[in-house]
Image (cartoon, rainbow, N blue to C red):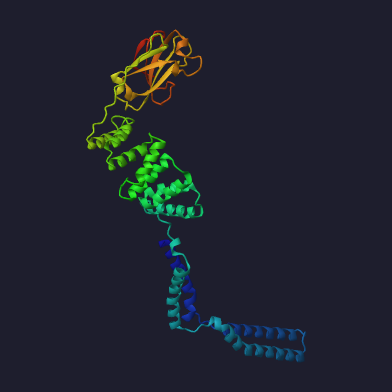
Length: 410
């Protein structure tokens, strides 16, 4: 920006330097004097030439007199034309001083130049565009939602568009508009647990979290279609509690609690909701010890992890427990997939876990049982994986095998 105005000032200065000197009378050189001097020199030169020609006999005295008369007439004609030339040419060379006009021009040219540029030019284009200020993003979201709503006016049968519009309104906490959008989508798509739950939620929030009436009816219909639908169970429990059906609310929350990891935040919230009702939550039933029927082709495997290897694990890593033929192909005959957080654990390997037809436990007499913690999450051993193996054991009789993970794959 500063460089632009500096260059503009230089250009204005150059323009004034060309305009002001004539107005200040800086050039007063006469035009006629040089021309008159040249004519006289030429006249005397030609006279001398004529005299020399007469002396040499090239001209008679009469011819010489006539030539001098002609030359004098030409000089007189030139002398009479000189003032006109001076007045015509002098208008551009012999300037008259006009200081008031020079001051006016000197002030007007810069002011007019800047004013016209500000009016007709693009001053904002001089500076590079600044980075947009960080905003919350809400105006842009509002604009996109408004455009979607406008488009759906010309596409009223666009069911997916109405679903998207309803969810967008929910994100903006515009619950009444969300309820209308979901109702339109419901009219186009019919009943589904997800859509009925969305519609019930929007209607309840629109009424201040009131699930009585239409919201509760939608949730009951959703649970009829899918009794295990998570969102319908969650909201349906609140609807049952508001109706005074506390036992039903607890059963629905308990159904959700049974699916959550015991130490998860969701489990803590659900236990808190159940506790507030005064009805004790059901304790998860202890897992029955796995048993293999006598003579069945299966193995009971107990897996433990060495304490020195557990320090760098967070429990989310994948654990594979598998059996492969002793002295046979390396392909596993049975594989169980678990998590490190499950350790120590007991699993049963049997023919139902076979990876390929004909490659079952029952087809082999002796196997090696292994357990591997995979850093990559794949069954193939990789550098850094932790693993352990048993000695060869017989398959028949449902043997129990202990495997300790004690080594690291190099």
